Length: 261
Figure (cartoon, rainbow, N blue to C red):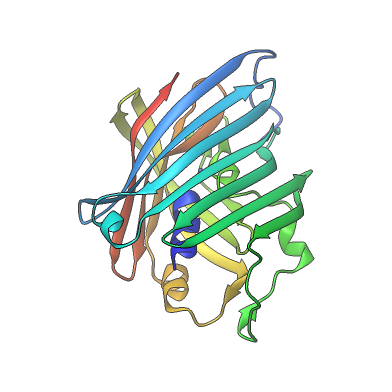
C-alpha cells in the first residue's frame, strides 16, 4: 500500500521549437511540499533541482509527519539525473533509499536513451504469485522514473496537459494520462503567477497484483488533479499542487516553497 501511494504522490512531475537551456548557464530551484489528509499533515518532502548544460539533477528527501509519525516513522532520500531532450527530459539514473519502521529498501534504476537498462532492488523483491501482472520488455521502453516523469517540457502552460507520462519505479509500470487543463493564478513562497491544473488518470500497466482494491479504486474511481508551474526560463514545468482521491478520502500535495535559489 505504501509503495503504491508513494508511486502516485511522486508522480506528482514538444517540439523542436522549444527553448534550449543556455550553455554553461546554471539554474537551481528549491521546492518544499506537504502531504495532507483532512487538513492533517502526513508527510513532508524537499527537493533541489539543478539545470546546467542541458542536463538536470534532482535530490530530495521525504519523511512522515504529524499523526503518521506516531504510527509508522518513514524516512527516505531520492536522487535522479538526466538530460533535457527536445520533447521531454531523458532520465539517466534514479535511486531511492527509505526506512519505514523496521523495513529498509533501496532501488536503483539505470536508463539508456529513455529505456530501462538495469534495475536493482536491495533487498530483492519477493517472489510473486499467479495473480501478478509481470513486466514485459516493451513496458520498459520510453519510460521515466517517478521524479523525471514529473518534469514536463512545453512551450507554454497551455501545452503542458494532454499527454501521457510513462512511469517505472523499479517494480510497477504505470501511465499517468494528463487530460484537459485550466490556467489559474497560484501563489506560494518564491512563486506568484499562473499554473495549469490538469486532470489525470492512473493506468496500471504491469508489475502489480491483480485484484488489489486500492489499485482498482485509483484506476477506476479516483479523481486526480495536478497543477504545474514553470521552473524559471528552463522550458520545464513541475508540479506545484496535486490531489489524489483514495478509498479513505482525498490526499493533497501542496508546495510550501517553489523558488529559484
